[in-house]
Amino acid sequence: MTTKVAICGANGRMGTQIIDEIRKLGNLELVAGFDVADEEKVLPGGVAVSHASKLSEVLAKTKPDVLIDFTTAAAATENVCIAAASGINLVVGTTGFSEEQLRRMHTAIADGKVAAVISPNYSLGVNLFWRLLTIAAEVLQDYDVEIIEAHHNQKKDAPSGTALAALDALKSTLGKDEVVYGRKGLALRGKEIGVHAIRAGDIIGDHTVLFAGPGERLEIKHQAHSRTALATGAVKAAGWVANARPGIYTMADVLNEQA
Ligand SMILES: NC(=O)c1ccc[n+]([C@@H]2O[C@H](COP(=O)([O-])OP(=O)(O)OC[C@H]3O[C@@H](n4cnc5c(N)ncnc54)[C@H](O)[C@@H]3O)[C@@H](O)[C@H]2O)c1
Image (cartoon, rainbow, N blue to C red; front, side, top):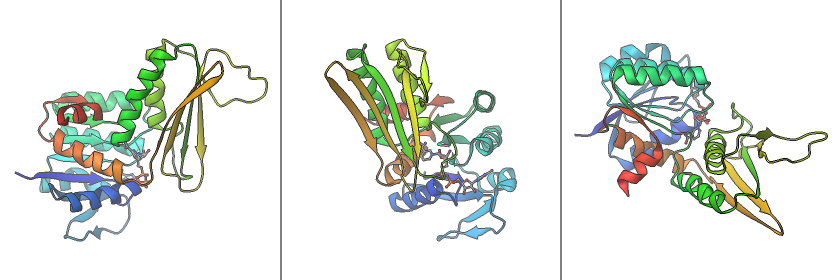
């Protein structure tokens, strides 16, 4: 049976691309879209983009197996709570959650006994990038480490969720806790991991981790040229999570089971 999906943030940059990918790949059926525009829009193929205030009502009518959310942290928290309470599995791509928002979503997912993939990045390349960082950090234990990310000038959260996931991986591999976000004035380097966020133009997403030691440096870099890899990954995750057991998963779980 075809997996039925709904998407929150249907008019956004990622939402639009994901809807395109669903149409191109043809293995999922889009049954509903949600956004916050005043006017309801009808997508090619006849699926309506409803106002987010009608989320419960339209989900009950269209019965998707999976809700994909690429909105804002505050909106996604509400959307996840509503979908989980309706027994709908989830793919959450939104980033920038507070601890409290994450706690609310995790509780709702557990209470609703649904399956959710939550990842700050759905691209295959970035998921490999995170793995490569830990390999490099295991070898280059004493090198200075800096994370540099760049995104378009409309991005709300900084540093990006992808950079924060890289930071977590590096902190646990290196056993370090100290982090410095940007530097200004007297800012002698210590043992910290440095994190830097650039916001400019229409950059889709660049992430570099630089390891520098005596006489050399190694840079591990990922650059997104379009949103295609992100959207393809989110669609793959939706197909996977439709049949997953209740719980919270990452994109690594999706990719490992498909390897
Ligand atoms: N995980 C990933 O791979 C990945 C990739 C790119 C972006 N992101 C994240 O996804 C999110 C969206 O990114 P974007 O570039 O598409 O942003 P965007 O601003 O282009 O799109 C967000 C859309 O959500 C809509 N929206 C706001 N409140 C809503 C609600 N309550 N219900 C439904 N829709 C609502 C907005 O109107 C907008 O159309 C951001 O948090 C971004 O950091 C994640």
